[in-house]
Amino acid sequence: MKLLVLNGSPKGDVSVTMQYVKFIRKKFPEHEYQVLNISYEIQRIERDEGVFGTVIDAVRSADAVLFAFPLYTLLVPAQYKRFIELVFERRVQDVFRGKYTAALSTSIRFFDQLAHAYLREVCDDLGMQYVGFYSAAMYDLLEEKEQERLASFARLFFRAVSQRVPTRPENAPVVRQDFVYEPGPVIRAGSSGTRKVLILTDSMDPVSNLAKMADRLRQGFGGSVELINLHDIDMRGGCLGCCQCGYDNTCVYKDGFRDFFLKKVLPADIVVLAGTVTDRYLSSRWKMYFDRSFFLGHTPKYAGKQLGFLISGPLRQVPSLREALFAIADVSQANSLVVTDEVPSSAELDALLDAMVTRLEACSEESYIRPRTFFHEGGFKIFRDNIYGGMRVAFQADYAYYRKHKLFDFPQKDLRTRLFNAVIVPLTRVPAIRRKAFADLRYRMIEPIGKVVR
Image (cartoon, rainbow, N blue to C red):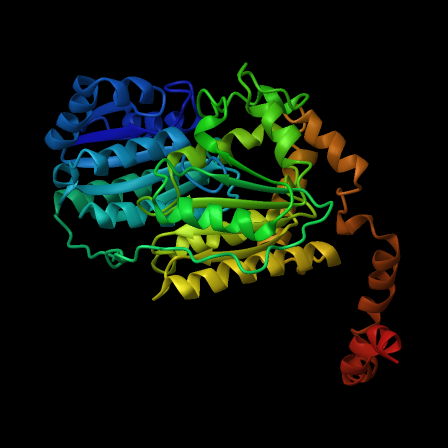
């Protein structure tokens, strides 16, 4: 069997992800393997149609395709995302149709489900025979149990391909509407006052719905509002995954992105991110922006801000993207609001945009940030434990930030709770005490907050 591995790591062969692929190759040497470093070579692939054609020819001749990648900011790396866009832009989807496929990722399992949901959606759009995915923590392969699990995954994948096991798509095709937005006059401009408002967009077409929406929003805020196009930012490439920024938040790129983020994004009170649904996410330019923001490590980059998401396209049909937008805000301790052009009329969109201005300003005035959800709580604990532990050397700037803000809040450090449990838990082994304790439990649960309410 001929397996084509599309390597999504910007580090090429010298990546954790590729060690998992090499393990599979050694475990199953009877198969033929071809590895193409997609992210590492993305500039050549995009620039040179001959190089792109070589990749497509490899897909055509393969019996199966393995998408292998590290997680970068909730998704595949921007370079990998750009390759997926090229497949659709250059209309070579048919080469992938019917090919058996699976996905393999490495990460610290921070929203790994989103990355795999996205890739599953893409594979369904390409008409591929999707078998499953394997999401590994970076150093799982050090454990014998995980080696056995990876071998089982590969064995089952090869078996499914050889036996032509039938599969079915999980996601319905996206249906795009032909709505053309014609904005009406702005009746009442907002009063952002001293608050700084920043609108970021990736629109390259001045008459697109997105461009019109962003401009209408800018007018609605009134006062001093900056509207910046991501294509005008000196951003020369996607994140390389080198982690050198972990020491002092300084990126290896000598371009203008770091200064832009520090001087424009961080000081803003309201930040609106405007993008178009491209395949099953935003554009690779937006993905590059998110990935490059990682120079600030695992810190909440939008903490205390109001985030607006202005989306053109079928957002309601792409659950993974909706979840990603919510996660971006929740993990960053920001408040968020979403408006899309999935409406029946321009008048309704005008009303939604005006309401967005009013709502973002009101929430900013109140300094309102919605309560945290599982996304923040679960994600924070993954970051906290890793930065305190194995990632501390690489991410010393993160470690300093977490210490300064007292984020190493391990529950075992709560001496009062530990003493309470040490005394009470043994007592509950006495049947009479246990019955009394559990009978009164519902009242004891409300007692502390009941005092506040009274």
